[in-house]
Image (cartoon, rainbow over the protein chains, first blue to last red):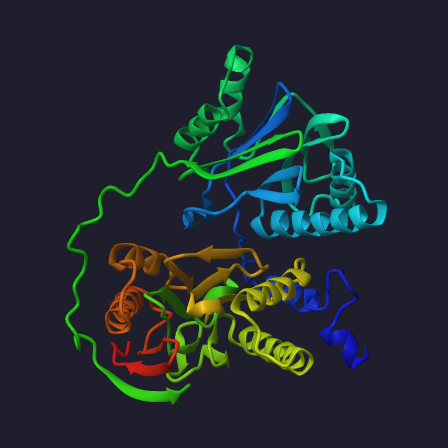
Length: 251
Length: 204
């Protein structure tokens, strides 16, 4: 095994060199680590001439909330955004990767990206890894052929829909969509039902509205869970409550 | 027993007014036996960038060596230091490469970016970045650290007050964790200087 290969695995590929050691550790009774998930309620819906995508902002590691305000609506192209649920590292990595592939494709063809292109790139990557890359996505955008909304499952299957929900809060959000879709529904209502009824989702609501030639990324559009219990005095630690020794490092 | 509980660690980074603090405990153990009380978990990458690595000690050291190698190459090619945001992306990419056979480490990255704006970030062991504006925690004591920091954090603290707050949060959290402790190691970084301090804590 050449030295270069150890430090730089082939460009863009996964490196499997630690797998043997990790398997040995698991056999010895060590539990494999749990990864950060994005519990999540993500939704999308098609309206008159555009798409609205919505997501909550809670990131969990088991039962603990690691990030109260993370971003789950990922940029793919100026006219295409993607919400991600599942393992946080997988959704971020897969959307970043396809986003750069789309950019290269735009340079190559000189045209605006199409939603179906992003869909095909994502589903072939996920199918290739047979569901081990745990990313469940709601992909939406407006291109020359009109507005499109798709859901992508971790194993690589896709659905094309008028309204979609994914994540642990998908059932709560879907109840709102199913009962109210025709009557001028708002996306924020659906996300809020997920936030309040699903333990894996919470904090704030992010919304992204995409229409032909224009997009509005409304980060923290709604803040239904403010921190209202902060004491105005705070904790005051007078100087030197903690004992320490001091070294200087010159800058 | 989780692999992250083999050596034990506690790491926290907090943002203040044009400054940041990064702190760790000092214990190295083999499950319940303590074998060192001066183990380094925070490394300085360059003048304004610090990296803390919690989790399995051997993976932390290997990962640090790989990152220093990549940073030195970057310095040779670009003739400048890496920005904290770039470094965070590098760490994330290195960890995600090993998605199906990961390093058992959780890094905490803290640095001063453009216009001396403090930057902190943590990741899980496969590189999912969490960019926070207030504080980040990692290690076996992370659950207590979340609680302590959530309660004690105030925005825009001066370096001295930030130091006291970070130390209180760290010491109170490691007191409730068997696998970390034996003192603390705190770095408070402002645009002009870096102050390194060792904390006196309970030695149990």
